[in-house]
Length: 173
Image 1 (cartoon, one colour):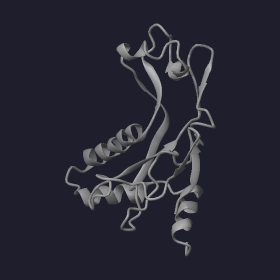
Image 2 (spheres, rainbow, N blue to C red; image 1 turned 135 degrees about the horizontal axis):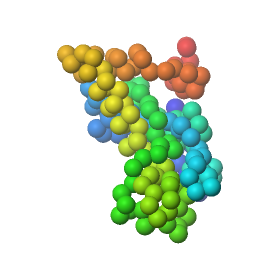
Image 3 (spheres, rainbow, N blue to C red; image 1 turned 180 degrees about the vertical axis):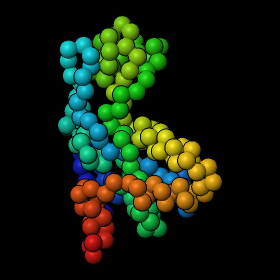
């Protein structure tokens, strides 16, 4: 199961893209979905992902995110979290490398002192999931890793997009 699409002008196939360590039998793997395709830069302009080079469809699994299944047929990732259009902190030392470039639109706040950046990646979605796990453990610190995984999978939202993907893999749904 998967699809082919162009990424930066190159044909790409997203089948069985889950890799190690996410394929470990007891791992919690986290995919990323798009939460926004545009953002207010705070400077009277809007930043946006380019549909031709970075297709960000709000509510959809991010094009770069692993779709699973694992090579041995397990449904992965375990869950998905916001991972596209995430406004996150930016080092003041890194800010200068964005000013005056095509990436300036990703800066949020004043160009001379802005400390935020619109970012994307499973490196943005995984902390969201880790925060949910931390909250669950704060309520019950005796949860086992298996119970944490069950909490995540049973409380994750299942929407039309997820059902469509499941039906592609399991036609009986």
